[in-house]
Length: 173
Image 1: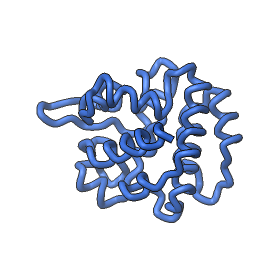
Image 2: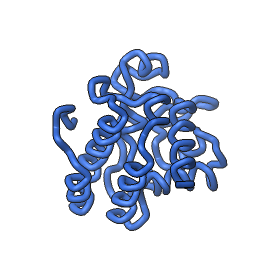
Image 3: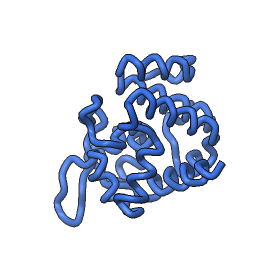
Image 4: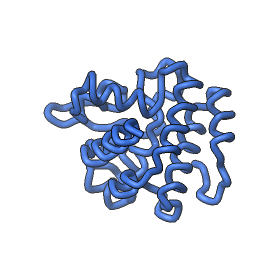
């Protein structure tokens, strides 16, 4: 995991993406988001932090992901899937982008972060993902995880909805 004190920049992210180091790029993307939301000490985003993410940063991160993955990954790809294909339904979105480990109707469980597909063969919109995976210990337990993040836990529609709303608002700028 990327250390909180690391001085990462979007230039570092661009280099990692160009080298197709998808997992490292996801971690740097998350670090840049934490830094912008002033949440480095917490180490995770919440609904309020997502609502304050600067649109220019989200635009830049999205552009870098889209460019490096030839449109396979990026926030705008996730937003489009959420709106057009999943029709604002968090479970449908999570299933579509390949984040679901298994489903026992009516409940679905998320993959552990390290089990995500960090290659171009992943489904469209699969990355970036750490912004959604990294949770505080208590929230992880409350969503059915093991205190280590979203892995094996249930979905959190509030967090996903907050990010999609932020992306939607930023798309108008």
